[in-house]
Structures are given as C-alpha cells and as structure tokens.
Amino acid sequence: MKTCKTIFAALALATATLTVAAPAALAQGAIVIVIDETQILADSKAGKDMFTKLKNIETQINAELKPTRDSLETERKAIATKLEGKTREAIVADAALVKSIEGFQTKSNEFAAKRQLVSQEYAATEQKAFQEFNKALEPVMLEVVKEKNAQVVLSKSQAVFTSASVDATALIVSKLDQKTPAITVVRQRAPAPQ
Picture 1 (tube, helix red, strand yellow):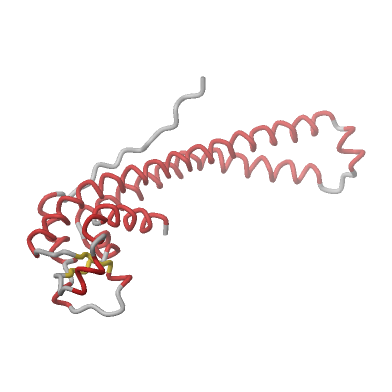
Picture 2 (cartoon, rainbow, N blue to C red):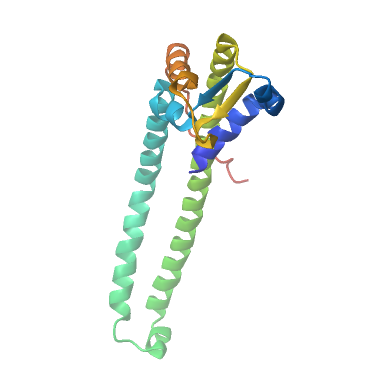
C-alpha cells in the first residue's frame, strides 16, 4: 500500500505546522478536525481519475510486454521438448541445441531487464501522479482548515474515536472535486541508454 503511505506522508507534511502545537492546543480546547486520507483518494474525482489513468498505463505496459513474454514461453516449450530424454552429454554434443539454449537465455535476460525498466518507469509514474494529487489537495485542505478555524488536523486512522461533526473529509472531497476533477498522469520514461 505504498500509494497510501505516499499520501499520508504528503498530508503529514502539509499539516506539520498545524500539529506542532497539538498537545498544548488540545489542552486549551483547540478546534480539531479529522480527515480520512484513504476516503479522499477513493471518493474524490481527482483520486478516481488518477487511479484510472494509472491502471490504463499499467495495462499499456502489460500489452507491450505480452508479445515478448508469449514468444519466450513458446520458445521455452520448444526447447524443453528437444531436451526430453537427452543426457547432459547428448545436449552438449548437439551444437544447434546449445546455440538455441544460449539464444533463449540471452533473450530471457533481455526481457527481464526490460521488465525491470518498465517497472521502475511505472513506479516513477505513480510517484509523480501522487505528487500532482497532493499538489491539488494541499490548498484545498488548508482552505478547509482556515474555514473551520482548526488548530489541529488528525488522521482518522490515528484517532481512537471521532465524532462526525469534526470529520472534514466530505468537505475536502467536495472542494477538491470543484477545483481539481482530474489529475495529469504522464507515463515516466527512463532515459535512453547511451
């Protein structure tokens, strides 16, 4: 659930100045609001849009890898059939078979490297998307804090009990939907090898 950790970290950073004085403020009857970060992600138009775009990029990546994956699987089965019943000495003596095995291994290694690269690209894409989401969320959250005159913002997941009257999640989702119904998500690419 790396994505939730990212949003939690961003929200913590955005509200850090508000929560530094939390213990003293609580003792003095401060106004506290609670937010549910997971619900903001799941219910907001921006969060839904971001997840849809990330899923589409993941589908695109899988479609790009599928032909090579299928080809390698077909080649692996063909080599396995040729190896059936042969001893190690017989395999080593068959130069064409050894060449096929070596070629298959090279292609498998190249495919593994490609999979690793696109995995890193997807992780970078996801990270950039969450940064964009957080950039849109922060001013909305600060607006709600100011509107509610809150001195403390707590994560609902960290609270033992919260009253519905202090939960600002729906208000944040509503304002975020008005201001940012979509998030720009662009597939990040690794630099070309030199």
